[in-house]
Every structure is written in C-alpha cells, then in structure tokens.
Length: 279
Image 1 (cartoon, rainbow, N blue to C red):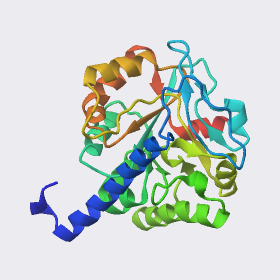
Image 2 (image 1 turned 180 degrees about the vertical axis):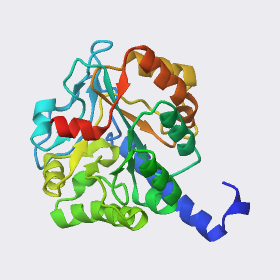
Image 3 (image 1 turned 90 degrees about the horizontal axis):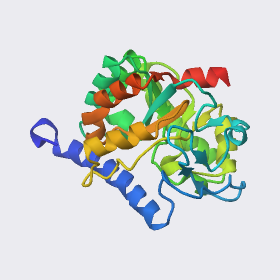
Image 4 (image 1 turned 120 degrees about the vertical axis):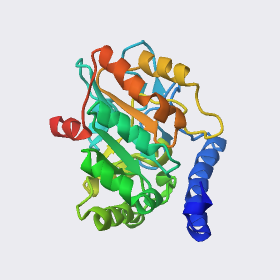
C-alpha cells in the first residue's frame, strides 16, 4: 500500500483487519479446523453441540464431490453446497476478508463474461471499500454476509451473539447502499454446527458452503496460475458452487481465462438467487 495516498492512521486501521483475518486462518490450521477443501473422508453433519469444518472428497473427475452433509441434509437449514443438477451451471462466490488490490480485476473479468457472483464480505471490507461495494451492486452482483469479525461461529451459542455478528454487516451495507442486504451467509473458515445453521435460518438467512475451492489465500505462497487453471477446470461439475478468495493475485490474473475455459466446456454462470428460488 502506498502511504502517499493514505494517512498513517487509516493505513494502520486498514492493516489491522487483514492481519486478524489471516491470523484466524493460521489459528484454524493449528487447531485442525482450516477449510478442508480436499478432505478424503469428510465428517458427517455435526450435532447441535458439535462443530465441523466443511470438507469435500473428490471421487470422480467432472462429478460433484461428497461433502460433510448431503444436499438433502443441508436443505432443512436453508443451506447449500451445490445444486443437484446435470445442467452445466456454475455459481461463482468470492470470500472478501480485506482488500489488497485484486478485486477490481476480478470484477473486470466477471463483467467481461457477464457472470454474476456473490461476494461474502467481512465487516472491515465493506466499511473500508465502499466504492467496490457500490460497483458490485451496480454490476449485478450480490453482497453476502461473512460476519463482522470472522470468528469461529461454532463457538457462539446464543442467538443474540450470533445475530450481532451478522447484523453489524447488514447495518453497514444499508448505510452505504440504502438497501437491505440479501440474506446470504457463509461461515468463516467453513466452521459450523447445526445450531449455527438453525440460528442463521431463524434470521432469514440461506447458508452457502461450496463444492469447489482450492488453497488460494496464502499471500506469500500464491498458486501457480496454470496449475490453478488445471485444477479448477478438472474439478468443475454441474451445479458447482465455486469458492475463490478476492485477495488472491492468482485469481485476479487467471479469472478471465478460467471463465473462458469453463464456457468452452459448456458451462454457464448463474446467481445464487436462482438456486434459492428453485429450492
């Protein structure tokens, strides 16, 4: 970040949240709770008193992976990880914990392909990047809720505390856009319990996990662009909810090419609003 363009006070404020966001990931890894993109033996859906990290087992190329819970099990909580379809649909989602200069390029690629996406934003992202939020809104994307502070939500046991994490983001969104926030929620790090899912449903939220993702969030160890494209094209499947991180320079670099390759494979891009309406 260029300090010629921003005051030191604002810079420190800006820096504080990315560090906290990254620390949450590293702490999760140490506890064995980091996002389990490639888990070979995903756990069963947890009980209300247990927590689990969302995990996937890719068993056949081009086919939907097996998750911690089935589409049917999640549906009772208004939750999703993919659509049960043979149609070549893709639902693009981005987790946005902070801004480091890559989101504009991602939005450019989405616009080039007229591809709608959902950006799950953390509280500091939405307050610090009002122009990006307004651009997302203007270009037909959905801004979803990734909580105010990116905590382990499975440790929250009361509806009041759970609601506070989501309502804070709602309030900032309404202040910026003048609109009510679409009630789409993604648990930080994919850590959840059935109690959490019930709490989200009680607030009118739909919860979204994913059926395709890769390790793209380490800033000092970004994936090789061509290896990333190969991995993401190999594992795409009908009805996929794709999770990418907007902080990834690799994603910003490859997204236009990746979307073109998916289109060449016969896929089209759809909004999560369509998935909810069809459920």
